[in-house]
Length: 307
Image 1 (cartoon, rainbow, N blue to C red):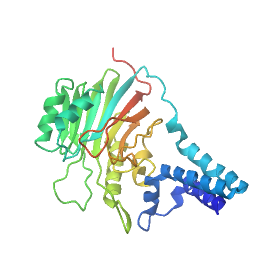
Image 2 (tube, rainbow, N blue to C red):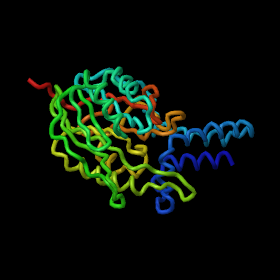
Image 3 (cartoon, rainbow, N blue to C red):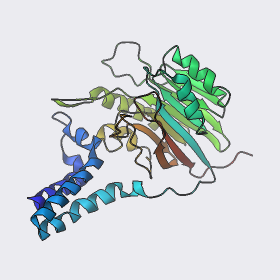
Image 4 (cartoon, rainbow, N blue to C red):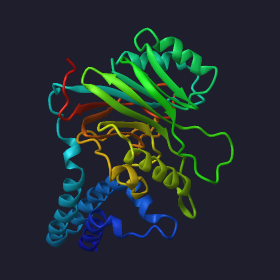
C-alpha cells in the first residue's frame, strides 16, 4: 500500500492539471496546497520503514523527484543583487488592522522602492499617506488599493476587474507608470475577490473572472515592462490564475507563504513581472494584518539607465 500511495502522490504532483475543475473546482483546490503533498512523503517513509518494504522505499523516489522538480528551485539561495533591480513590497494591510501607523513604518523600514497596499479604508488611509510620505513622496490610490513609490508616477487609472455579479461600489485595481532610473515601468496593483473552501469544494468563480479581466489588461499594456503586485487570493500553481501566470513570470526563489499570518499555509500575495525577473520573494515580519507582507527583488531584463 505505501508504494501505491507514493505512486499516486507523484501522479498528483506531476499531472495536477488533469484533476477536473468541473466539480467543486477540485483541481484548483489541489493546486492551492500542492507543495504540501510533500508532507505525504514523510508519512509514507515512516510506513515504509515500519513495514521494512524495499519496494515502498524505492517508490518514494517518485514523489521526491516530482516535488523537487516542481518546488526545489524555490529553496535555492537567491543570486546576488542585479545591476538594475527594484525592491518591492506587497501587503494586504487588512481593513481591521488596529495599527496602520506601525504597519506603515514596518514596511518603510525595509527600504523598498515600491509599496503596494490593499484593503485601504478611511480613516486608516490617511494614516498610511501621512506615515509613508517622507520616504515615498509619490503615491496613487484607487478604491481600496494603492501604490507608494520613491519615483514619480503618471498616468494612474482605475482598472475595471469587477466580476459581473458584483453590483456594489467595488474598486480593487489600478495601473500607473513608474518613472524609475531604468526607464518607465507599468505597475499594476490588484486585489482579486476572495475564495472560500466549503463542503462543495472551492468557491472561486468571482476570483477567476476577475483574473481573466486583469490578464486582458496586462496583455494590452503598451509598455514592455510590467510589475504586478497584489493579493490575488490564489497560488501561482492554481489554474484560476492562469490568465496571469501564462503572461508573466513568477518568483524563481522563495516560498514566502503569506496567509494566514498566524499559520501561513499558502502564498496568495503575489509579485509577477513581464520583461523582468522576480529573482527572490520572502515574507516580512507580521503586522496588524491577517496577511504577512512579502518583499521581492525584481531584476529588470535589459534595462538601460536613463542618460
